[in-house]
Length: 170
Length: 170
Image 1 (cartoon, rainbow over the protein chains, first blue to last red):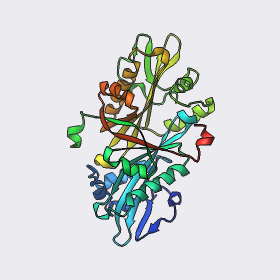
Image 2: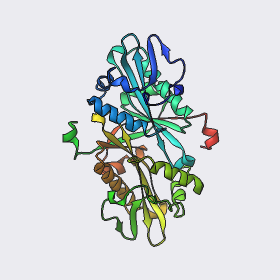
Image 3: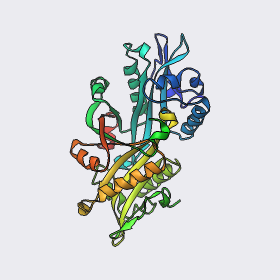
Image 4: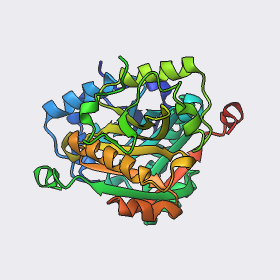
């Protein structure tokens, strides 16, 4: 129950230059997972909440694939990304992989870690047989994702749930 | 086990002008669900595949919310839309609702059915406490979704799994 999914799904080599790519583990709360996500957006949560969410994700098999990159010299998480699999009826009851919540610790930028996170997630999505991978990003990040093999497809729109915004302190 | 989720989640009134909005049901294969999806994209599947996928979605609780609009004079499905809920660590371990696979039968256009599908899905997402709803669309459909209360947020990119395209006959 320690890992969100099997590391066998992760492309080899998983380790290089003191960085190890692997599935999210239940002990990653202590390794700075929440602090890293806070570089992306509001992401404060207690350990108990982390464990609860981890177990919920794990109990939904073949769905959540969160990878992390750990600096094995400091035992801190320095990058992460999520791939989750949507079951569909279209495309002969196919599956579509969504890439979400990519973040690289600001102290580790310029080392191609973002590119590696995406490559690892693409490998997982392809291995699982998803007919496509999709992601949304700001205009300023489009070039980066094009380098990763993605193509501009459409427009992302959003609608915030105003009834809960005050509570969630967005 | 007949319904994907409870109709109690659907905003009232569910019925008007001989059109009933409700959760996807296991008998909807016979009511033209696959044929309707084919107006959107490749969506041919056998009844056995439909049942298998229906059960998989149902077994993933609090995740898949596919609604249909049935013409109660013909007992055929004339519109559908999917909301699925992604569990996250960000936003205090919040949930994000994705809107996917919206289609209105070409013979039923001009009756505001698309708008109603989106309103129903928004209601479900808000009721479930999702901190935001997101969707991707072509540039030509942005105006429609803005009318539905969505705002332009970013760019959608995609990457097709070329290793399976021949098999899936995309």
